[in-house]
Length: 161
Image (tube, rainbow, N blue to C red; front, side, top):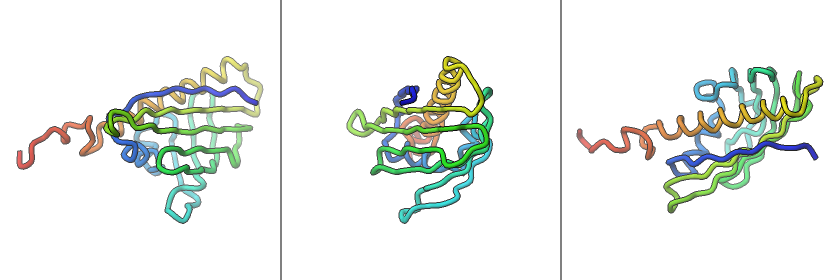
């Protein structure tokens, strides 16, 4: 089994708000550093993305690939590689756990990347770590700056002010 890289972050928002940002693929280029284009190719009966084409530029890893997504309730989404120019596999997941009575969310991101070209394991894991760290930081910033979120200025404004 391939080694994976994982990291976690706490976001000042409810899990549903965090998953709403994760599920909004069209906006990924606005807040992720690595995703330059995102196109939903297929959706499930609930309107959630089942297949998404992504153009990725993560330094050592540049690719145009398609991922298949699996949604588990409202607290987990995982993906696997369908097709790619550069990657042999790209498997990952976001797992959300509510904390502080649901006001905050612990987000764990797991990622396993295998490239078709030879690459040292430590370089590959460093690329995975960079992707994860940037994605989590971008997700946190995006969710907490959304109107009405606990981390946004609007959440603290008085009505009619």
